[in-house]
Image (tube, rainbow, N blue to C red; front, side):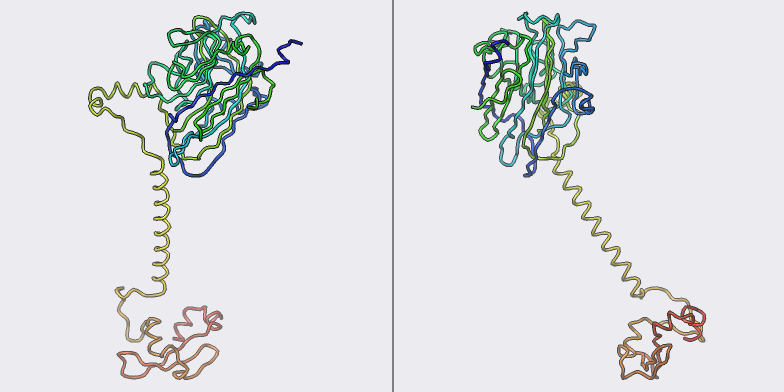
Length: 413
């Protein structure tokens, strides 16, 4: 057994990362958890739904890995770039407390040169864990790592932790075997030589990386070691991976991924904004938009929520008023309603309130008698000169056969 199995070297990169991803959310905590023990469609048929593979990225069901670039392509593998992005966004900043979200992620990966030799130390650019503001942009190949391209503006808010096997003197690469943290730039904010602790990224072995970010302290830890080891003791955004090749090639294999964070839930308005779309809009706007010097910021989703709440409340009030008005129309006759001329030999229609006033609310003092059909009352109308008699039918009579017969009921009246 190789002696390297008895020793585990871990690379620790600690850097204070300031908040560069700004968005809003309500004060309700929610946990986001992403877990891919491998990338096999047999074990998880929803992988292609949960992950977006862009550019030269491919899922190898046979090897159960994500490959960047795709080694099955007939074209030259040099100068290729691709991304594997989780489809659902993760909110990484609370606008109320201005505290970034804490998260942890771990993944295993392996680098292979295109000729499958395990002794070659000639790397082909790097693999990066990225946090970016959109899930559509594919960066340039080579030192751009598949993260940024010419269409991305200077304020493109991207965080990348790169595992680089190519020395780019132009961009400050220390050597061809280093780990770095990039904040919206190709140049690493902090980089460290992995060879100093006995780690060689492109030696063909499977490595495991742990990335932990403490939002309260604004502190990021990046650790790397052999696969199979436990974690060593001591605006909406999308997380995933990108990789690229330059003049030399190697296959970046992603074997597993585990990601978890505690964030604030928020209604996401789907957006297709990418670096390329922003560039096209700038070209269409031309000189007219250059005078303002600023782009209109998208409206927050709070306005949409307020609109929904107000609409539902207005609908409830309208239905309540409609039901009340219908009930009132049934109980009280409209005074302005035009009545047909009444023949002299037919009874006049009185309202319930008029009859109640005439009989003094059906007082027992006005009772004249009763039978099975109802009770007879004496009454006097406000404009009447002589007393009148009123009959209040009983519920038993109205429910009987005679009461149900409208013609007999009118004859009785």
